[in-house]
Length: 231
Image (cartoon, rainbow, N blue to C red):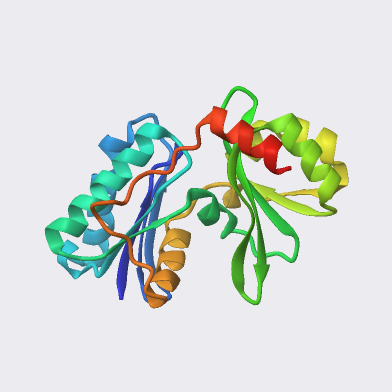
């Protein structure tokens, strides 16, 4: 099964093509251009390089958020267009799950995307029996409050994502040795991770309805209520 995965939820534009569990090619760029200018040419370049036609893709997958409102819409519209035009299935993957998927560790994994104004989009994940499980649902959180919560409730954490870069000083100050910072190459969403997650979901029959698939936006007011109410 050939899968085309893409992500434009952050400043990085990334595209990957896999065949079952084999990576055929991956293309990631962070440049001063809009995702709308970059995405389709990158897809074409990847397909041309592999001598694959778009009609040969069996499944389309994208990250559905949280992340940049505009970026999410660009990748989703592109993937939907391909899926509808070629009558192929589509699967949406949570952005933070894809980011956490970069890390394989016995520790709890805390992916963070910079939501600006001292906030991050984040969730808590853990590998159990070779399956990445959600421990705490994705949310939009004040970085100081969130780090205090993590410090109180967890002993060792693996953090990654551009949020962990933007707020490293705060994370380091509050969590100290409890926080393990990912190497720089694991701080960015990889389209290949999105493809792998989508492949597993496809095997389980978890296919999305192309007409009803929408981006996941975490609004601050709602997120704040959830955080204080739930924790």
